[in-house]
Image (cartoon, rainbow, N blue to C red):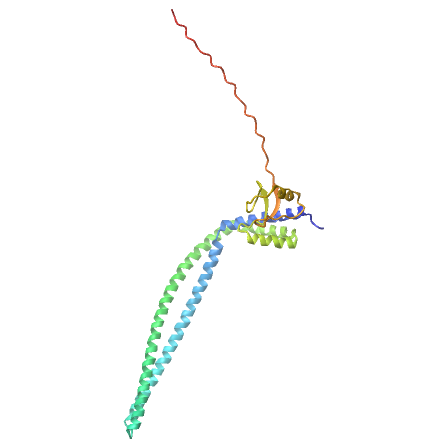
Amino acid sequence: MKQSIEKKLNNLLKLQIIDSNIYEIKKVRGALPEEVQDLEDELIGYNTRQEKYNDEINNLQQDIEDLKNKVSNAKKLIKKYKEQQMNVRNNREFDAISKEIELQELDSKIFQKKSGENEIKIEEIKEEIKATKKIIKERTEILKSKRNDLEVLSSESQGEEDKLVKQKTKAAKRVENSLLLGYEKLVERQRNGLAVVKVKRNACGGCFNIVPPQRQTEIKEKKKIILCEYCGRIFADVIVEEVKEKKPIKRTKRTKRTKRTSKVKK
């Protein structure tokens, strides 16, 4: 059975009331859920950084071991070449071996220098690890505190929120899919989660811009779904302000003051 516009608006308004109640519960929690999530993500990042630091240290240490082996091999070759120099038969052979010794000595110095640079890098990374550990400790303590606060707030309102979520699921089923999709987009777009509002005191209940009288008449008739031309919210109805009659002010009768004349004794 096709729903009337009035029925559609009523169903949307019921859904909005439930969503507004959920919004208020979440508002009490404030930014805590996001802060907790941000801290958790931050700690994951710091721990990942620590793992990279440790991997880098392992790679540098392995490189140092390889360089030490190269230095050791270079020294062995230098010793070997020097022994060969003792048995050369001419200057040409002597010069050739001398060049090989020079090359090995140069390589040995380069390897030792590179090894020393790696040692310095390791010390620098260790300092970074130390600083990161301190940050992790601080952030972990803050996260623990915020989690406790969130747990307290959640325990106080979680039951009510779960109840409202169930109500929302039922209420959403009464709204047409196309209308529900538009409603949900509006809810996401609005900071206060208001997608369906009423006209109150001649103004939109969402953005508070003035709604013309003719527009208000159309909203009251509920023959079509009307949106606010400023914020795009759905108008559900118009709240008619009751005009209270002013009671006439009762005037109290003033009593005439009699002048007292004093008799002068002759």
